Length: 427
Image 1 (tube, one colour):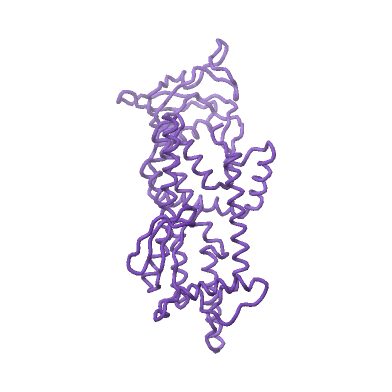
Image 2 (image 1 turned 45 degrees about the horizontal axis):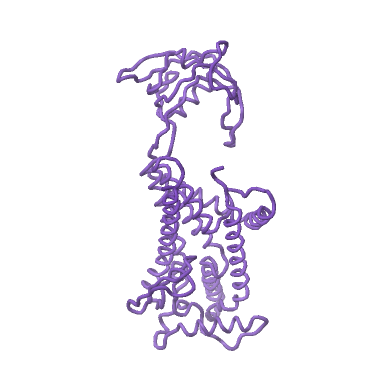
């Protein structure tokens, strides 16, 4: 059964990845067709063709390696203007020849490079934006449809005594002081309605009042068997681990009552999903900025006893492996589903951010080329000069090749690391 669950987790993530890639390419395909560009192919994957079907002028299909996708648009670059020159002239000429072949005779007006700048930006931005929308949708389903695990106002347990912070004792000794909550008469199952005269809606609000009131007698009202019961709670001063101003755990002397809350999924406002998506986008951006250092650390971890950073980059294999482990863990089904959905949402946000890197062959590189073309034309109009020829992006083929080689190298490194020394999330 555990093996079936593991495989099921991997399949869930592979299907989610295929859907994410497919919708990414739809984000390019739809505006391209709306703007009249001839689209020859819509493919999911790379390498040998597994299946395809031509509908109208476009061939739709799947290829063997599900590591991405593409659409083939007519005239991505302007036609060749003379032979290529320089060290990489063969590569540049091959790119120009392949581009020229996509321009069908009699349909020169339906090429991509002839589109206004804003339309070219829309076409290239459509893919990443589709991933952003999908990521927001997944996070919204999790946060507002299922909920976020939080401590509720229902009491789960009441400590019998006060133990020092970090104590490994599991039972109270006769000389241990009684816990304030037990002395106050709070029982498991009670629902906290107010603490210190203030109505509360979350356990965090109750904890904040208690921690700020050591030695003070606090009026407490609980609901017990449908009736409201007034009690008096006097927190004691004790060393406890709390969150500091920067969000990291610190040990401080605070008010302590000895009561814990039941944890449940609490549905969040509808705007929480997009907010979580943008937080994830910020985290991915930071990861990309630090990518050379992170990749170096992964290389070091491969040949040493150093553990891999669980927040570092992963290959498709690494993501699938984590999904399988999550699905096979001994936890409630809903908990596992939430983690898998969060993984899928984070994957789409990563695709959104990564594709906006302003380097060819990524979408961000094509957007930069279009914007540069627009700036050149605007500058020419401002100075009263003739409209310049379209930017010949094939001249950037050498840089594109370097970027592609680096991306392949990164992919190989991550793949090897995820096979030999995978990220350990479960100890």
